[in-house]
Image 1: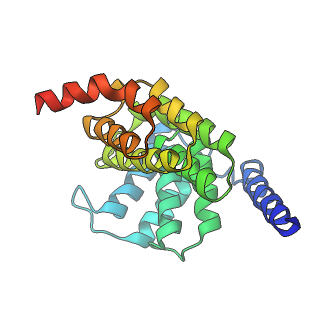
Image 2: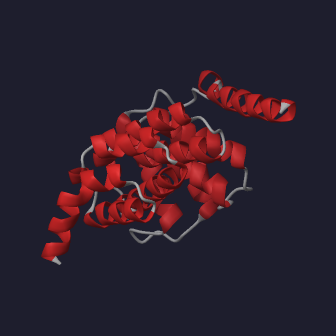
Length: 219
């Protein structure tokens, strides 16, 4: 109806406004060397998770991550988005979290890209954008270096696949399969195969069956 169209238009305008944040973001600190920029991020990350002898300090994490994020450090942008999403060290703000996830995704951070893929599948309802961000995430997943990031990527990808199977989002499933079932963990491959069978998606199941059988034979 008319109100549904208005709501859909407002979602796209909101996303457009967030995208404009790239043009007006702070440029302070661009004189820093790469090493100095990385050090800011590492300080923020250490305070965020409490490693290397650093006590967890959410407010300090936000301060350091903000400085690094504003000068386009992708990992800092992603973790800053997480801080705003969860309200860690700063007041929870979904719009600000979305902005930082979006910037991280555009800087090819794999987790930021998958977060934006899920956003477009569940909130913005833009399948084309979801496919684009999924492609970014799959292409750059080798860049995941911090402890726990690979597991987080696997979990988020599983959520995307599960949702896409239920809703029949063939372009998403094709993108995952195009990346190659060898790009999936054994658990992801078996999970996707099981979901496909459960939902009578024989086309997907057939493409995964050889590897799924191989995995089960080796268990």
